[in-house]
Image (tube, rainbow, N blue to C red; front, side, top):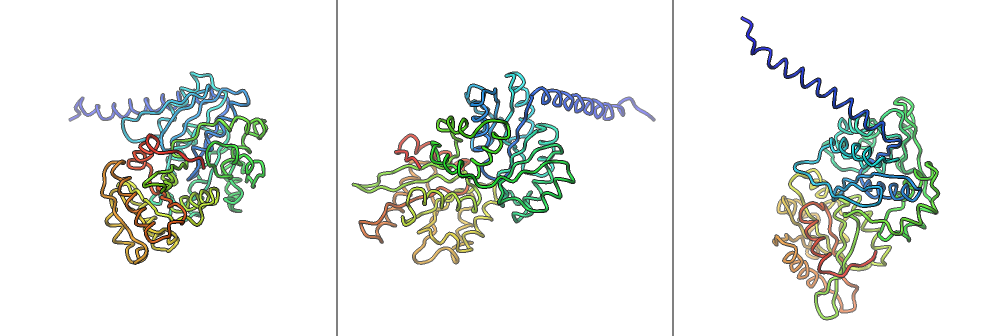
Length: 411
């Protein structure tokens, strides 16, 4: 016999569908009130590109609301003021809905947002429904988030490209372009522009108050020039640009009479390929190619795929330029066991960092630096310690501690 209570599940679903419809309609209305939308996606460099474009647009006289979701998520307002996003739980792409509402409230001419998604399905939803960008910047296709994006660069590129919304103008570095992308662009209805190396971008790397990769600069310049803002105008304001929290930075740390070592944070580079590129960039820029090098690899429990990447990288021999390696975080002991025969030798040790707090961690690192220097003459170059792996948790704690206690070095 039919019972009135049987209607409750059906009615609940009906109300839920109405709610989704209203939310979807409201989101579309809000986003269309923003004259121009720019989204920045890719694997590395998204936060930097977002900041560069937003700063350049402000120099052009536009009102811009921007958002980065990198090491520390922030909203950047038209006057350049930044507000850190406080999250009660895990990050969600629904933050973009709130971002659009802020941009509307600020009467912004442009919304520039770093995309948050990792899974291809979420990338599609974020681009096609939440942000609906006129312009999409793809920074690069490197191997990371392998459980969602695949095990090689080609697979990463295909999954990210298939999420591009129709009607979008896409900028990407020339070196990341592949012939099949033009076929996909024609099929999906978006325009593709490959941006080649730029002497102006190379020049501007010397102006910025922090180290920046030339491809990031050239992409930002290409977007700004497309929007009618000359590189000279953008570059004049970039000298005062506030960088992302996770930027590459270094400190000079005293550990004895007239003895120092340098700690270089590459924590936000995350994956091995990006970390190696950043390490080479810093050492060549500073003339540190021959300095002895130690790696401090910070692991996270929720990034087992990245730990596996580092295990493969360390076993491959590509990191054998390191004098020694220090591991910290969940899975450190297991990783040491995996790499001890391939990476660890009589001259190259793998250590576990037992300390829990930045101050005591630094004391352990200093002991390792001293051991490294013992085997070398007194005139040898100062030791370099590179923070690698993950910035979340331990990485942030150590950066904050060094910012308070050590002497910053401009790279």
